[in-house]
Length: 459
Ligand code: ATP
Ligand code: MG
Image (tube, rainbow, N blue to C red; front, side):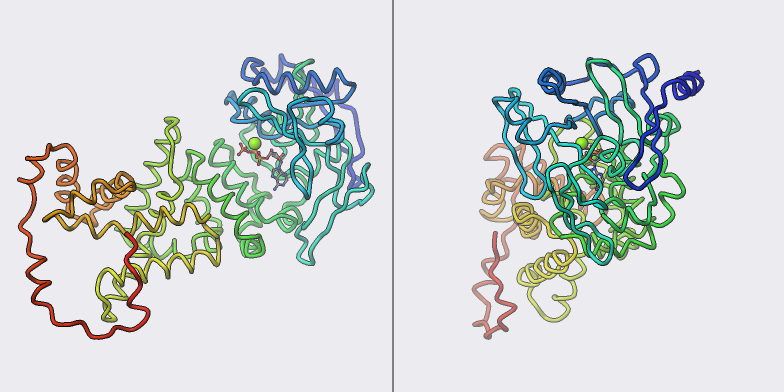
């Protein structure tokens, strides 16, 4: 039924337009009876921004992921607006707005807690004749290094990644302008790249990650032509700055669909450049169980609207790699704690070459790892000190995952759960016999150790 109506609208409302690569783009103007977007899902900011820009004589549309989500009856998490006004012109329309970004300038318009991002239509990087003398630059590999050209709406649509992301919704008329059959693709449950996928992935390899993430998140199937070149081009991710990869990976892991996204990353060979050791960890039953549990926990929390700690998440993804390195250093003769810290640094360094984990998260990650051996000490004053540690809760959750995955006896996790719930007297009664101090007194003076082994224990 919807398809038939769509076909009718497409026939009557198409108006051809020339896209910058010479191909005719058929703009479809789809009315609300067909797309059935629920206007109440729009934010106040999105409505006011488009209204004010239109009142000032400019074109303004809700664009990109928000329109796609609205068509899928999902409440968008934020709203992007596209306009033919320049950033300066947008800035003049809104008192509470500021121009941001050096490479491509956008405007943030503030409404209470909400920030709406307004971007001027971008032109093709192929032509350097943008309205405002912007500039573009392409590397030999085809990767776009700068993309700074203003353009018209057709050009703006063609440089977006997927057909489902190139839709423009006008809240005033409630019409959707569709340049690349995005509405039909969404109705058919399809995620399709605009233009030639190989060229588009070369221009920006992150689009491969977006393909995986958006298809997992939205339950859209990747179109065959869009999917086919990904494994061959996966290595191109190496050229993407490590910090951008981190941002994209974080979006993927916090999408609420981390498990299916990680499966898809592996299926397409994209994980090598992101989590280089993932294959090795997942090949071991314990490692696979641990990561699956952690990702499932994360997905459940995200979908329930609970906060998730990226530091914790990366700690779980890399833990079995740390365990392997920890064992290796102990076999080489290091004592357990220095060996753990050497393993942590090794893993963090190897990881940083591929995908730089933001420092504030990597600090949490190392704290969680570094506290793990302390859970095995259940005598004397040590448990009392550990439970007061500011990172105790995260480290304890991590311990429970280790127990649940079968790495540690569940009795250990239970002991800490009981210890936390107990009162002072009960806690004292729970303590195990303290054998450590005696051992310490007996210990012979230490031989000088190698420089690497003297890594301080940061806990
Ligand atoms: P999400 O729901 O995760 O926000 P999104 O598609 O809205 O998904 P954004 O990063 O917010 O993702 O991007 C907004 C829009 O900008 C996209 O819908 C798409 O039209 C365009 N876009 C983003 N990244 C790219 C890219 N790498 N190449 C081309 N277009 C892009
Ligand atoms: Mg978005």
